Image (cartoon, rainbow, N blue to C red):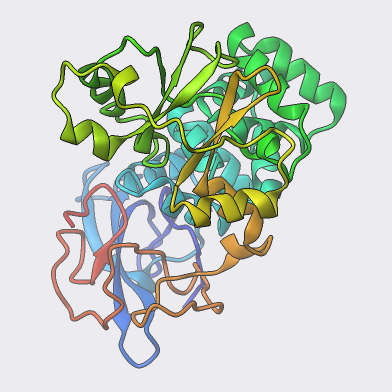
Length: 372
């Protein structure tokens, strides 16, 4: 049986009849003994018509009946993959991209919209980020960097040569580029190098209702939505004088018309931009916080450090290489995407021959015909 790691959008002749077909979908079954997956059937579209056949007719055939796979055209399989993985979280899609070939990884990245690609890049190892960004046109690369969180964009730009870094910054919107430039000026393993420049900032005259409206923003990460920082104008970093913070739990306990000035927590001392990573970690652990304010020598809020960025720097550099999908919660370092296609919704238990709504009776379909 031929090994084809990425058959969607591929073309090849049916072995017994020699006619050319295009693969639209595949069906897989799980092998209980080894907990691996195997393609058993393919859903194909006929190409050149025979005596009694219509061009474009579709049918389901055994995987072994199709040979000689090749891509019908560049990017076609990538578009199918994008549609297939639409429901995946960014971290899960990043895991899939990491295990694709560099060529296919670039095709899938090109097919994603800017916001989706930005979210996925933030979850990839540095070398994959650089590889994907370098394959984009510079104008699009700048747009994707703008869509990333400023701290993640700064980390990615820091991996690039200085001249390329400057070209991309020049193509970004001035306001977005200014925040990223500030982050690049700090040492990497300090509060300044870890922080984001876009926390929730409101003035002391804002109300609880104003703060809750900002927290409801679906684009905010849970860590940034955990608290609101109260500052004098201007309310964009670097702000006016930092006054304190209000945790979202306090916002839920007070009436909507309550002024933030009356409930602000002023006791917690903020971090400084040059606070080293171990001290940042101790601060978050000591006060049970998932984000913390960073204030400069003038007393202005310049950003906030979140626990996810701290963890990124505490974990081993190759932590993203570890697969965590085992049924018992243990990592499975032997994961091979070509033998065991990634399914984040799997319970880890051996699957039976259930109809997934795709072309065959396998446990999972991977194309547009899948009805999981």
